[in-house]
Amino acid sequence: MYLANFIQPTLAQRAQYPQSTLIISLTFFFALMFWAVMALVYYSLRDRG
Image (tube, rainbow, N blue to C red; front, side, top):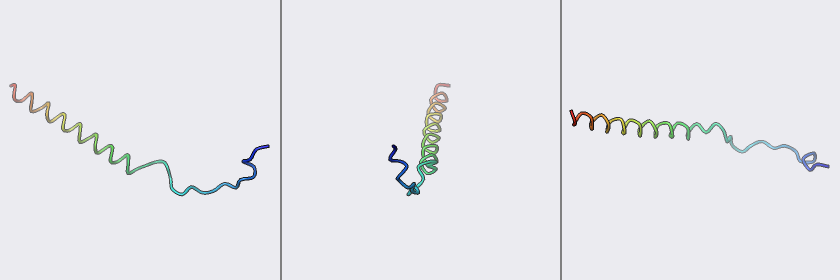
């Protein structure tokens, strides 16, 4: 006999997925890091030439 048969399902308090705020902030962070690395590479190559 399973206990799940006697427990009524409940609604979630908040959605776990998708976490759009986290996804947007991580995307912005990694885009900023990518831009910073590319800018440093560009200026490094420009100084050598």
